[in-house]
Image: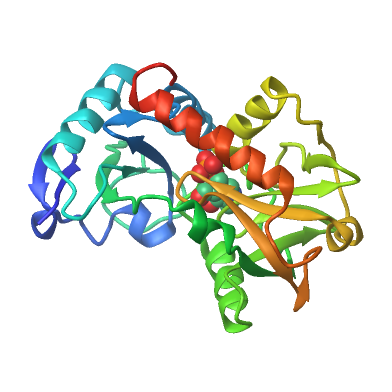
Length: 291
Ligand SMILES: Cc1ncc(COP(=O)(O)O)c(C=O)c1O
C-alpha cells in the first residue's frame, strides 16, 4: 500500500480521506503539479515549484508551504514508496485546493485552509525501442478556456478531448485553436517543419511544459535549429516529424495523424537525436550532475 501525504500527515493511501465539501471535489478549485524523479533525483524541481506558484497566484490562493517544506515532503514520500517493479523512477503528484468551506458557494470562503495532497507513482522505465514505435494522433478543436497556462485540476476539457482521441483509436489529441496548434490533451506538441523544430509560444492557450522548456534548452545547446512560433494545422499536416512531450511521456513521436502517416510513418532523425540527448541528460541527473 502506498504512503501519501494529506494536510500534514503521512498515511496509507486507503486512510487518506477528505470532506465532500472540499472545493477541489465540488468545484475543481485547485491546482497541481507532476514532478518526475529519476533514481531519487527530482527533475527540474525549482521550475515545477515556480510553475506551482504561478498557478496559485493565478487562482488567488496562498502557497501553503515554503519551497523547503515542499522539498522535504517530496523527499520523504520518495523514500516511503520504494518501487515494487523494476526500475527506480517515480513521479510525484501534488495538489492544492481551496479547502473545505462550511457550505457550497461559488465565491471564495473567508477562512481558507487549503487541502494539500501528495502521492507517488511508479514510472515505468523508458524503452527507446518502444518509444520509437510512436503513436497515432488526431486533431481536434481546442474547446478549453482562456487560462490553459494554469495547471488547474479542472481538466474536463482535456479529458473529453483525450477520450475523443481514444474513441478514434488515437493515443492523444492535438488541439487546434483558431487554426493554430496549441498542445496535446495532456502534453506539449513539437513539429519539424522545413528541418526546423517548431513549438507554439507560451501564453494563455497552453501549459508551459517543463519538458518543453528542457527540450528547447537542449536543442539550443546541441545546435538543433528551433523556433517558438505559432504554426497552423496545415503546417502540422505537412510536418516531417511530430512529437508529444511531457514529464511522464518524455518525447513521444507521432507516426500517424488523422489516419495518414507522418512522413514515412517512422520516428524521424531529429527525434532520434533528441531522445539520446534527453536520456543522457537523465543519466547526468541520476549522477547528480544536472537538475
Ligand atoms: C495540458 C498539458 N500540456 C502540457 C503538459 C506537459 O507538461 P510537463 O512537461 O510539465 O509535464 C501537460 C502535462 O501533463 C499537460 O497536461
